[in-house]
Amino acid sequence: MELKLKIILLLLLSLTTILFICATVRAGEEVEYLRPPPRKAFRLPWDPKSSSQPQQVHISLAGDKHIRVSWVTTDKSSPSIVEYGTSTGKYSYKAQGESTKYSYVLYRSGMIHHTVIGPLQDNTVYFYRCGGEDPEFQFKTPPSKFPVTFAVAGDLGQTGWTKSTLDHIDQCKYDVHLLPGDLSYADYIQHRWDTFGQLVQPLASARPWMVTQGNHEKEYIPFVVDEFISYNSRWKMPFEESGSTSNLYYSFDVAGVHTIMLGSYTDYDDYSDQYRWLKADLQKVDRKKTPWLVVLFHVPWYNSNEAHQGEADDMMTSMEPLLYAAGADIVFAGHVHAYERTRRVYNGKPDPCGAVHITIGDGGNKEGLARKYKLPQPEWSVFREASFGHGELAIINSTHASWSWHRNDDDEPVRSDQVSITSLIDSGCSSIRVMN
Image 1 (cartoon, helix red, strand yellow):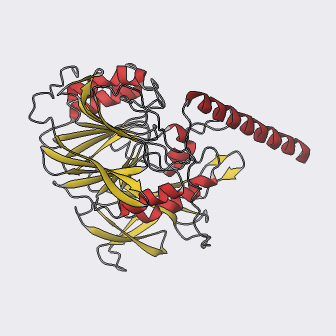
Image 2: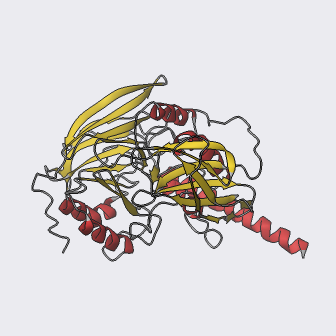
Image 3: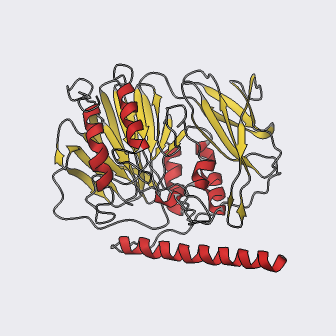
């Protein structure tokens, strides 16, 4: 019996290795540019913790005036409770949540806890602890009215550049972090999800992190492991609160901004659940309450870099008319490891009623930068540069916002691109003419 078990495990490991190599080769075939040498992987110092001590703490929005607190413990019996209040060390409220775990070949995750707390006051600092254990953490809830600021960075990974990007974001006064896919770059090596959670905890435990999936989150092994099992288990987003049936696409409101997170790696054709959900979600948008409409997904629709050309054409064909009809203001994407900003564009041409598309897959990933751009530069492309960095979207009021991109230059955040953006709220563009 023991011999049979060993044979099965060896077969599984062999299959995993073969599939990983095949996936790596296919990825290499898609990328025709030469990446520069990346920085080394960033490693946190060894910090032993008790089995019940909360680790990898991060928070996300979970409906109106509610926050979801997520963390991991190695103790499987640790309770999924969060104590919280507005004074340090004094917890006036307590909430009970849920827990889950998953297996991935020979890896066994810790207990992953998700607890929703609230209702919470807007623009308020709360102190909290998880599972009845120290240490104490704190976060600030977003405001209910303008102004509101988003930090934006995709394709993070766990390198020296990642740490630099996170340090720069930490210097920014922001309310919510938006991440358009490719978080940990675990790439089948599951303990890298754990180290990523530790790396981002100082920021992700203090401000809501709203994320969507990228190709590096799939981690699919046919007949062995379902796709997105690690991502879905660890990074639960408010999909149920927004009427979605999948953690891969959802929406949420912050102040006067309706933000939609879409999935580039789940079905998106006209007959898909995601398409039907998007159409219904857009129909519910009240631009008097949320005059700004922001959308995120992983694979860019407008991309003049030589990397990943044409990968999003089908999704764009299916969903761009919906966003155009709804008057989407700004679309963020990642995937291409560089920065690019367009003018307002639709159907491949500049259009005053189209969205501003921003590719920001330059958070610091291990694969390096995509340096080669197509020439001549398309008419719709305004600014493009292959450097690591992050962006800040400061929405000032119902009609005006400021966008800035900050390059990581010699470990200092350098503002390299800045533009004022006017919403489409009073433009007459938001007709919802194809939504009926």
